Amino acid sequence: MTINEIENEIIEEFELFGDDWEGKYEHIIDLGKNLPIIKPEYKTENNLIKGCQSKVWLHTDFENGKLIYTADSDAIITKGIVALMVRVLSNQPPKAIINAELNFMKTIGLMEHLSPTRANGLVSMINRMKQDAIKFNT
Image (spheres, one colour):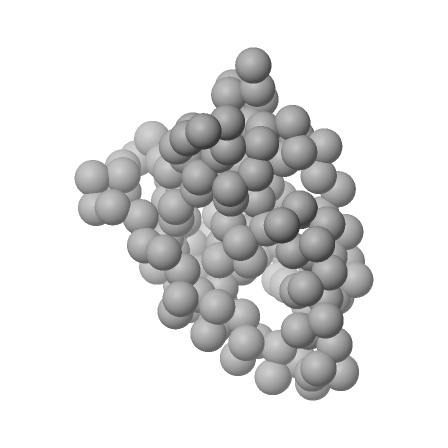
């Protein structure tokens, strides 16, 4: 699936909740529970996302021309947000990640429902994922 197709799938999932943000947060938490966990050896200082209120680790592998992200967080909502980003950007070629606009976050209202520190953390996470894509873009 392309990034846009995955984004559309997520938008459709969140539309089922209408304006019920309690339900949306529960869905985000559930997504975090299904996040493929980062290997313990990748939970290093180097893989910590700077600018996040909670701890977020992100590891990037490059396989068959695509980036594979694994991640974890010590906070349940943040872990769900990380799971969304991994779902959208993992298994994609670097160029697609670099060019991704990630409009789904605005469409589902995620940015306006996050605290300023979580929103800053999300931006830091996206920047890190895109920086990794730039490194592997050959």
